[in-house]
Structures are given as structure tokens and as C-alpha cells.
Amino acid sequence: MEVAKITSRGQVTIPLDIRRSLGVSEGDKIVFVEDGGRIFITNAAKVAFANLRSSFVGEAERLYLKNEDDVVALVDEVREKIWEEKYANTD
Image (cartoon, rainbow, N blue to C red; front, top):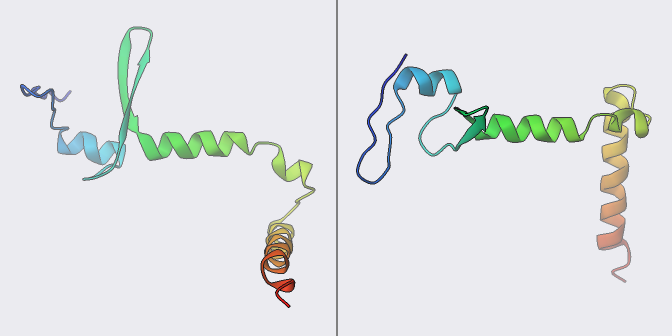
């Protein structure tokens, strides 16, 4: 258990072991989550990544992507469309 003191401006120094456990350093953002009357602190980037990952659930199947080669082919196709839209009609 770690203890920290709140300053008159409401600031708290997160102990080094806790920062390491969260995987955060200077400039990183953290999130405070309330659950059942308890407050949890977590790495904001990890929360954002988890939310992003969950929003993609089922997309590979929907796009018929079975392996990495399928993903690369899709990216190439999208890049080609973008290039054509941007540069093909510049006559």
C-alpha cells in the first residue's frame, strides 16, 4: 500500500512503484474510474486502446480478412483509391 498527500491545489504525487505498475511517466494521462463507491486509477492510453480494440470486434469477419496478407491487400486497395481520388484527375 502506498500513501500520498494532497496539496492545497489538489495535486498528488503518484508514488514511483505505482507509476511503474500503471506504465505511466511524465506527460502521460491517467483515468479515475468509480466502481461501487471505490475509485480506481488506470493508464488512459491503455483504456483508450482497449475501447478501440473492442470497437473492432467482428470487423475482420465482416471484411472477410483471414490473415495478414488479406489485411495488407486491403490497405493497398484503400491507398490506391485515395491516391486516385487525390491525383488521378489532375489533368
